[in-house]
Length: 220
Image (cartoon, rainbow, N blue to C red; front, top):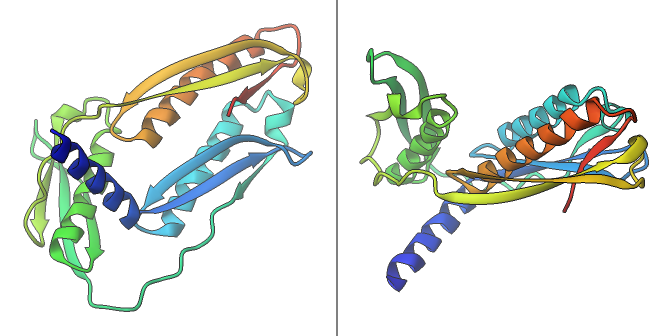
């Protein structure tokens, strides 16, 4: 059992090492970080675009909050140094609707060897599958490249997130109420994001109908 856990930990570490991560801060006018967003992809720019979209979507959703609406979304990650050029192997996976056989999307990745390329492409397809309302109605099928990676279990990671509702729209104001939510997903990042969305949504609903101009702020 110990050997299995060690192997699993090494696999997760190596998978994260191959992906590029981008962090974005939502920063208030006084320079204080209101919220943080992270995304990962096998391309740094794509990861940053996803993280920035998360930040701006959150601003749109909380546009009634003056602190949030006037904040800026800033990339805090540095661009990684590219490795020496070498020949890349390519692998592709189709996301298929198993009910009608229709190809919904295709995901292609490159890596130093075929197995890594297929792992990356399968990861992208797997992520897209679990954004669907009914992920079990879809499957990821390899169409080009090396051998198919070993299938992985369903999401089992659980994370918690706490959000404070602060009186009168002031960052340094009094905490009126605290909201804590949990979520389970295929990765720690996705689970934490879902938990924070739920906690922030609960806070925002109460803030919108309060007699004050309250602000919702994630607790770190």
